[in-house]
Image (cartoon, rainbow, N blue to C red; front, side, top):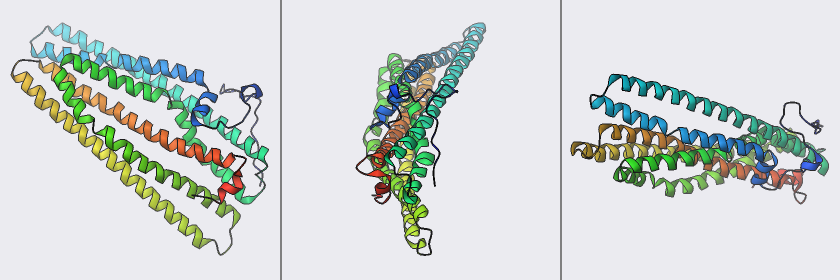
Length: 340
């Protein structure tokens, strides 16, 4: 079986040519090298869009606080309507910024997928490893399935953590400006995640790495041996993939459960501390509303940071296995026989 090689002279859709002067089609040794090779200039545009999003993201919190305070204090109705209209305008602007950023991320990701597929085909062909059936099975697995999540991560590799970190820092700074003790209580409730998230994520990564290697070995076995003796060893590997997937599911959803639980505990802490301050006249009701909204606003980017960290580790594992397959010492055929 022969897999057709992609044209490397250039692409009409603007993803960029695979020119010899730009490193040809050599697959970079590291994930960061892949991000650089697939358009670092595009990442800078995404970084600027992310910065714009998290700077605008604070405006709705302050507008909510002012609207509630005007309403509870018996303020002018015209001012409340003006603030509500401004809130709607800011929400529209924020939505358009996020739309543009997400579409641009998708383009960068798809260009990375396209480049990496072509590069893997070219490098495997240059090594002369596409003749055997087992090696061809591994190559198909690399090009069709394993490349997709890696290229998708390239689009969010810089912009996602910057956006999430920017929202977290700016929101907590704003909440600390409103009421330091309430901000400290919210931060204390969320901080345990810094301990259990890395531990649970490392356990997930080990299972994902084993799953990828097992699936790759299964792919080569299916191509190499379709005889009557094949079902038993293939069934064993399919059962191994099942066990690994179930382990990932249990860890992933346990981590999500703990994160959601801490979020709601944080909301309860805000109501308790904020309620006390409101009863004593230390703060206005609008401040409590801003805190609850701010904590909800922090929960999403905090989850995005965790998801990004998860994807980073999983993608590093995937990419490391691909680089190992394409290394001159291993070769595709050899890597197909060593799933561990």
